[in-house]
Amino acid sequence: MSGNLDRIDFEILGLLQKNILLPYKAIATQVGLASSSVHDRIKRLWNSGVLRSASAEIDLKSLGFNIEALLMIELSQHDRSTVEDFMKVVLELPEVEFAYLVTGRHDMIVKIVVRDMEHLKDLALDHFTSRPNVTRIETCIVFEARNSHIDLGAGHGIL
Figure (cartoon, rainbow, N blue to C red):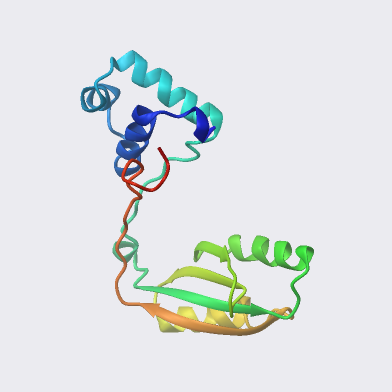
């Protein structure tokens, strides 16, 4: 699909990734199109799978989740079914925000949010180190996290 996108599509995507609730009229003004054209383009982006989800960013600390951590996990087996099964189990845990299958020393990096250190310990012991295919986990506490978005039109070879 990316071969069918033009500069305006990328501008629209850039605006939506910063604010998915931006009205069509505001987007139209910024990209120089009619609102109906913006509507049609956004509908095409959804239908083609370029746009996959719309979500709310929640302040987890306000809900009592005070610790973010990254779990770097090494697996004992690397066959497809073991990895897929483990990924499925991990993503069902309510504390898991992201799970990445990666190259390098670790096999997987899992981002979690927990209430406190006791919650972190219980999660690690009950759901990670107790699994037979996990040989090792390292835990990194996140001191601070900042979000960024890729500038879709700025020299990334996209256009």
